[in-house]
Length: 123
Image (cartoon, rainbow, N blue to C red; front, side, top):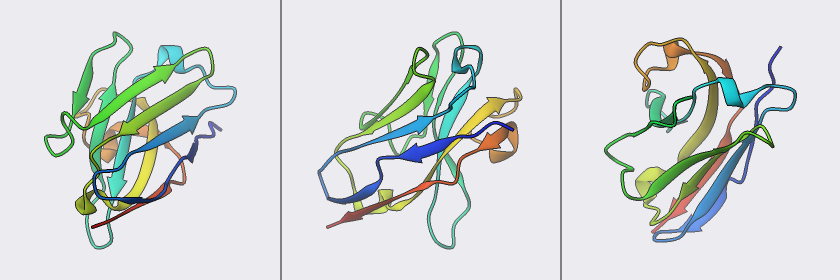
């Protein structure tokens, strides 16, 4: 079973920054397309950013220009750098792996999930 462990969440002021990490010990991230999702209370899980094996990257419109997804294959770790945070970014953030080729922003398109890390942004 693949284990994905998110970290780096916490509280931030609006305009601040946080960096999330997703460690995948024993899992080869070099051969996988991975993503970050988030879910706020009462809302559906939504795709935030997606990075493919070929290096192409996709972002939700709501985070373009503020968030950056990256991957360190040597460390088997996926990152999400979040800048200019807004209160509406408050959510549980999840790492997803093993993209099956569907819509990148659909939770159904991934086989493996972490347990999430909470991000809270205050105004």
